[in-house]
Length: 136
Image 1: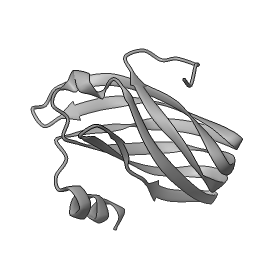
Image 2 (image 1 turned 30 degrees about the vertical axis):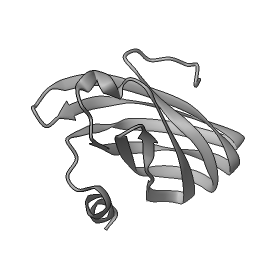
Image 3 (image 1 turned 60 degrees about the horizontal axis):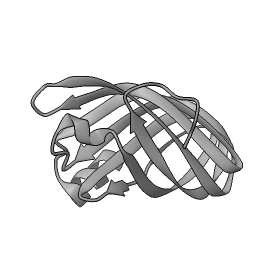
Image 4 (image 1 turned 180 degrees about the vertical axis):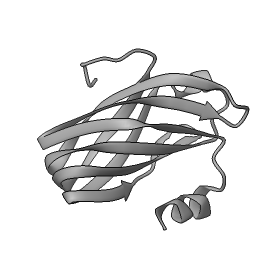
């Protein structure tokens, strides 16, 4: 059902990221992840992401993530910040999706995980070539 909504809203992605992530928040939040970007042409690149958030958001979660990527001109273009609004409601486990955008590129992270988290927040996801503990 969640994937159907993404396809209905944006069509077929031209890349995706499969990976894992963890995050937590107490009004201010952070999220860290790692995975592989796979393009339609078959190119595979390792990517890391991190990002801050602020809002009515409390708890912690972690799990698998599958990110649909739309309008990616080339694999280098993933390495930037994508802004968005996200909401979570995890009690033991849950599934969620939101959209984030940077110019014409849209990402749709689909998260399946465990934890206890409730809220809504505004923030961004910063994709990088190397892992970083700095969420900014």
